[in-house]
Amino acid sequence: MSRATRPLLLGLAGLAATAGLAAATQHWQERARWQEAGQALYEGSRPLTARLVGHEQDLPPQATRCVNCHSGSSAIAPALTPERLTRHLPRRGGPPSRYDEASFCRLLRSGVDPAWVLLPRAMPRYTLPDRECRELWLALSTR
Amino acid sequence: MTRSVLLPCPAEVGQPGPATGAISRRQWLAAFGALALCAGQESLAAHGDLGPVEPRVLPPDLELTLHDGRRTRLSGLLQGHITALQLMFTACSSTCPIQGAIFSALQQALAGRLPAARLLSISLDPLNDHPAQLSSWLRTHGAGATWQAAAPPARHADVMLDFVQGRPKAGSVGDRHNAQIFLFDTRGRLAYRSAEFAAAADLARLMQQLAAQPG
Image (cartoon, rainbow over all chains, first blue to last red; front, side, top):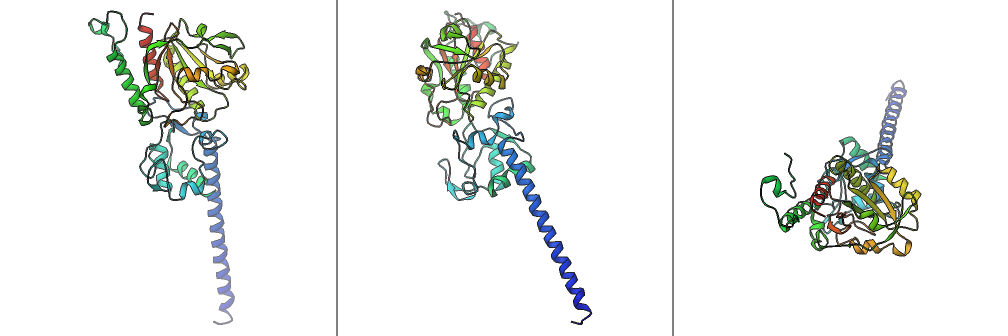
């Protein structure tokens, strides 16, 4: 390598590193935004649309919050932790299973869990666009 | 003409009904089957606690404090109206918001069809559910004049729970009570136990059928 080209190459390497760092930073910032948006869905500060099976009307937002049943002292459903969601565990009497984004979204929309066990009727079925479901999944599976 | 899906009325189709005017066993079974089908597997397992109550029974005549602070007796609230009763408490954040939403939808469903019907939410937490809390809970769910909330004295907190057999059953998700709705006839007698989280439209149809019976 000639003396003339060395600074040029060093400069290019620096630019590439800077660009890579910027892309990574942007990725993590975007991911953090999605997680934050998902957390708002989980806590109910962003409303979720859902109804009970067999019902003709949507539930009001105060009745569709995840935290109502999955959090707090009066929780009647499992805590939605990354470990609980992503570990291979027996659930509801079915064979061991774990969630990924697709099975998580299917459960929210249809009430069918990763092992094809149907959830109780008390769990509302959600009308959830793909983006919102991804936000919720990111918030719950990686926090 | 719109006919009831759950309990067809013989008079509407020109057939003689039972001499007493009472709903036949077949009709009750049809209604019960429709609600049970809606209910899912967990409620199908609890046949003994679902459907028509025969013979109908009067509840204990509890003293109650209403959401507006008035004191009354349960019999005074029930007699003269078809009433849907639910058990709840205002600090319950899991199933009770859904129960409130079901009563809200039922209130709307009944408004044009059975305006004399009543809805009654009875608290299982009288130590915390004072009139202010009950009023706030009713407001949250958009309760109108036909929907009341009440709490018994603390020593009688579980009396209604035991009377209606409303404790959580196998498959129930509630921790203190299940999410059935209990229908009372105009004589104040328990006539029907719904499936958990029954749909407002089904409950409204059942209440109309109850109202169509001679007292």
